[in-house]
Length: 253
Ligand SMILES: C[S@@+](CC[C@H](N)C(=O)[O-])C[C@H]1O[C@@H](n2cnc3c(N)ncnc32)[C@H](O)[C@@H]1O
Image (cartoon, protein in one colour):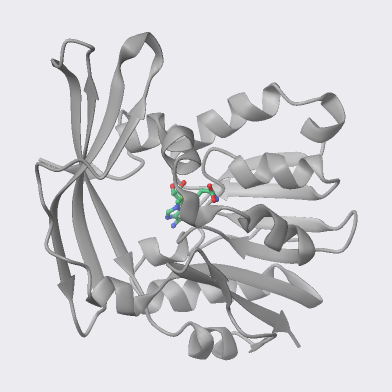
């Protein structure tokens, strides 16, 4: 039985940083978010995960609140923050919360939902609620940056080759982390891509030490009507990241 991505005990959470570092299609995203926030400004990050961007932006002088629903991801973010220089750590606040129903009772210069975070929830009421949360936390004139996958790539995703690793990365002690796509289906109408991803930790002998099948679901549609319904307007053309997704930027009017 596949567990949800980022669930407690999942390898997607345990090896998130290694998996993300290996993903060249994400390179340069921190720079893009940094350019959207005024110097010394404050940021709300929805889906902060292990704090990859949270820490990077705080190191650039930004004050940042990172929110995530997954305790397994947040505990890694806390470990990462604890190892940072005191001044950088002092600019980071980590909060467990659900982006579809959050009220921190304060506003920010930038609200961001990086690396497909919004795509984890269905593109209906959950997007409507998330955009209401985004707008509520934006100061007048503030920006929202929502990174979403490309729908056409989800629609055209090829059938999986379940025994062919799509990622194979070295681990300590000669072990390897391999990633397989065991199942994949796209449901038109609700624009849902559902995948069963299996991570396997392999011993140098080739023996499988640990295996973790996990369900990874993405939803996608044009976010503009949701943003506009929440009182936001498009600020610029979506910013391409690695030809697999775009950061959609909205402004609070
Ligand atoms: C792909 S990770 C992105 C982590 C980090 N921002 C980065 O760019 O590396 C997506 C994160 O969104 C979180 N997430 C999913 N649904 C959420 C929700 N409803 N509220 C808050 N966080 C959520 C997941 O737990 C996960 O940590």
